[in-house]
Image 1: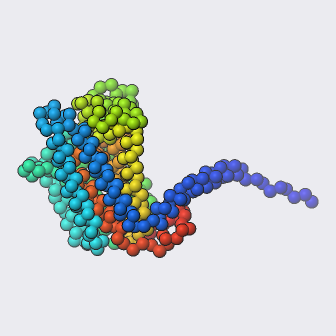
Image 2: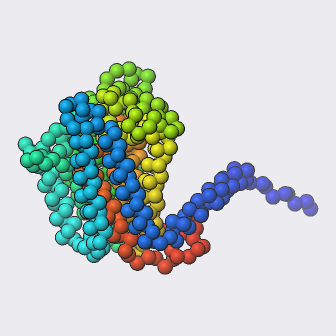
Length: 420
């Protein structure tokens, strides 16, 4: 009696190709993963400080270059904005090292979290009062005499602490959507609602990234993300349609051929022209042409375009490398710390810095529509710079926590990583 040959699986070739691709990916990423997961927490703290200060120094230098011509055209000192940014930088660096010395038990304090969230909501309400100032159609500034600042920047850190504290205190976040969303979503909806009323929808993107990353690393139920994406997409459409200038930005981004005139077209085209002119090595520090009133917001949202024009592709890669160092140091905290609060806080900070950087550079390079989000540490803005440096100090304080015993093994593999 003859026996039939076993049937060959039809998808064997496909599985083999997929397996080879997966093995190649693991072969490339395994050394990097092991370096991040087994490194010293002290070196992570040093890396955060060095990258943050390096980006701040580079940012002050570019603010001077990008703003000097415009300041002269207005009959003001070419060093005016640079000196202000330098003062904010020094204050922020001091605040960074002060924050790095604060114990984790202080950050976990419930009263501190409630007070910070309450103060942030109160200041956001004041923005909508006569004390608020409108800049470029967005009412997100609060003026107190000669001083003016953005409460939304302070609200980023307050929201981070609120969300992390809410998720870290509960042990049922992974199994209960109610435990994951309450009370964390209350603070999120509060700050987002007040900021949107003021017209600053771009900052809400950062809020959403911070909240989503904390929920993801807390292992919240996946149905939260699927439903939130649908609701968020619908709300985003309504927010875009509600303001003509936002709708125009999205249309010109989706259909570049229609972008022939208007502020959105002019700004996007000037930014791309600056990057193209810089080529590999750039035109030289201070030699930008687009900053001569050709590129609006040259020292603020579009400062990476001026940096690319003057320092070229190499200079832009240096900026991206410094942000990469910052992200890897935060990833080390996530992988090595045994404290749930610390891991979630590091994840929120990574979403904050990496998210803002991606959106800003994506906006300038045309990958995303024009969104008013500054480049952390580099764009002009005292509140943004000081809060970014303070958040870096908070990240440094997170390194002073016990590490997970399993994370010291040399046999670590990316597939073995779990964030509980």
